[in-house]
Image (cartoon, rainbow, N blue to C red; front, top):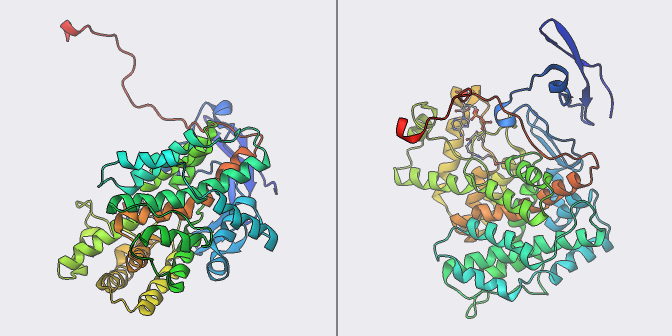
Length: 431
Ligand code: CMC
């Protein structure tokens, strides 16, 4: 890594030098890790908007220019030309697979697609209206009780290869079973003859009395969505996976924590919240203007869901592709969804409004994805589960990158304490 001139911090008349780091795409950072030992000061950065917690070689993102690349490959090219399994391999192992590596990787998904039969009993215990994200998180954490983990500090390559496929393959089965549970229908087992996405669709929508017809357009649309969700550098859930993993928690536990973080409506849960919002607007006579005004009103907690992003200050490149994909899929399936029309109107209104222009607020990945899921027949409460299936290779890649770093440290931020100073305990009868 190229070394730059040191940064200087002047405190109390003393000057302290801190090293500057430069990434391969020219991003610059000041290494403040010695700041406290040198000066007794810590930095304050609420929400980590200006803090790098690691060096990472997985995903490059330029929020001003709207650029997103996995391992150097633009997501536009991957979404068009790659498969989800190939992209997952790229993220996890760092380079595109040869045809033999891809064949072996894909085939191994079949060996790990089933769930231990005892784990099926867990589904019986969940309430029939349980949110599928709650089921997903519980089931993924429970995998640790059934399948051997790996030694976080000293994993063998074979163990790591097994756990990658085990997680990706079983999460797909868990997701489909969670849906079946919500429908009160029998589980449909994974099939050897189907690839990753058709297998998922079959487990979701086939039943003993009806074999689901798998349309290529639907498979392609899901493929694009999974690829576009596969990684997004240090977002909230990935940072959570890293933080939990930094304590050397096992991979299942770290991924479970990521799933829980993703559930929040400011993060992956936004895809569900967007459809709630569009349905609300639809019920309210499609009054887009009213909701744009509400989103601008600081006395109102309402926000345009699927709008804005911590790092994108231009159009989210994923949203561009997803918007096009939503239009294409609905046209191919002959679906006329009034929510798509409302979404487009909302976007057009917001993008010409000074409030959104000044704050660089654009549609993000979650704005149009729900329209695609709806067209496929996936219910709203499964949307964030779909995001989790897509994001899994990214979480695994980050966990592995962290574990491979011999200088890795437990994540442990500082704080500025603002509570009471020392005071004497007062016994209860004197209070
Ligand atoms: N609607 C209305 N105003 C907004 C919105 C929005 N969706 N997003 C941001 N703002 C305003 C915000 O009120 C603030 O205004 P001011 O400067 O006057 O106080 C300004 O824009 C900056 O917003 P912020 O909350 O400081 O930005 P942030 O980086 O902390 O939050 C965000 C990013 C994504 C949480 C936020 O934009 C948001 O809540 N969006 C809606 C939820 C959403 O769509 N989340 C999915 C994110 S993409 C998927 C993922 O990777 O998680």
